[in-house]
Length: 175
Image 1 (cartoon, rainbow, N blue to C red):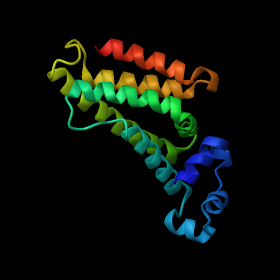
Image 2: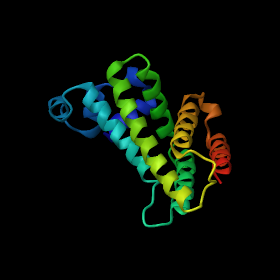
Image 3: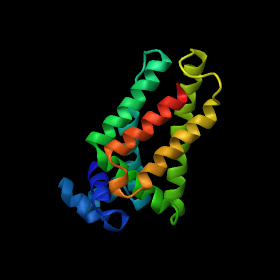
Image 4: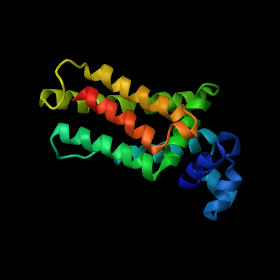
C-alpha cells in the first residue's frame, strides 16, 4: 500500500502501475494481484493507508477541546512533514470526478472523516471547548471542504504555511 501511495504521489493515477508497485516492494506481479486483484482494491488500500496518516492526528483519552487542538496540530505537522499526503488526496479528488469507483471510495472516506469530526465537535461543544453557536455537522463539513479545497490548489498554494494559515482560521472560527 505504501508503494502505491508513493507512486500515486510521484506520478498521479496515470503513473500508478501495478508492475512498478510489485517491483518497488520486491514481489512478483501475481503476488500483488493475489492481494489486490483490481486497481480499485489497490486504491482502497492506498486510501486506507492515507487515512491512517490522518487518523494518527486524533488522540483519545483527553478532553474533547484538547483532542480538537491536537487534531489541528497533527494536520499542520502532516502538512510540514508529509506533503505527499496532500498530493495523494488531491489525486483522489481529481480522479473521483471521472471515475465512479474512485468516487465511491472518496465518498466513503469523506463520510467517515466528516462523521469523526462531527462527533469530536459535538463532544467539544458539550464540554464548552467550542462556541455554542456552531452546528457540529455543518462545521465538520466546512472543515472537510476547506481541507479538500486546499488539496486541489497548485503545489505552491498548498504548502505548509498556507495550510497552517487555513487551519488557524478554522480554529479561530471554532473557538
